[in-house]
Amino acid sequence: MHSIQPVDRDTLGDRAYRRLRELLMSGQLKPGERLSLRSVADALGVSIMPVRGAVSRLVADHALEVTPSRAIRVPLTTVAQFRQITEIRIEIEGFAAARAAHARSPGELEAIAVCEAGFREESVAARPDLARAVQLNMNFHFAVYRASAMPMLVEIVEQLWLRVGPIINLETRDDPGRLAAGGAYRRHGEALEAIRRGDGEAARAAIAADIEGAAAFIIARGDILAG
Image 1 (tube, rainbow, N blue to C red):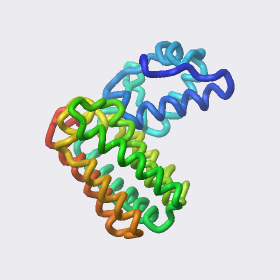
Image 2: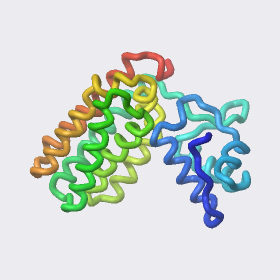
Image 3: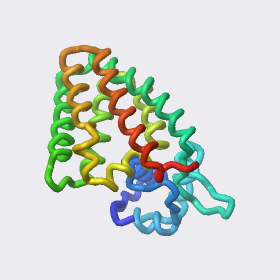
């Protein structure tokens, strides 16, 4: 829990909820990892009450679960569930990328380009910073999706990433060679160029290929998913 920074004293429940969401979406919490309310509260610098409320909200989001022994943990996802989420992500995130190709502003395009460059540089580095690469990957995707000019769509994507963030980022964190060999940075580059020239279908295809490639690797690896 050393990566969690203390939160301010106002709106503690909401802030704790957002901080835990960020940790899940960015893969800093692993599938099956158990959370102690006391440890989380201490790491955030708050009492247990706001953490308990935040955890309850995340359980309702299906981002955390309560085990029969009353422990709080990051859910394990089966192969069948992961395949289903992947199909949904391809449709929804592909649509968001296609929309971004037509709706993006110059500033949003620049933000996408900055994220793409950072992830590409980290991916081909001799000694990549895996934690930074994971964050840059998420930053790129959400820079694209925010450029769709559809905030409700971004909220839907965030809900999906709450479920898959611990999974799709774990495989990157565990394998330094995966960044260069996996080709994600190439798909990002293709998506950027498609958005730059206003080609919605190409942007959709690049994001779909990125999601499909990562999913295939995770399923083939066999030790991240349950059952």
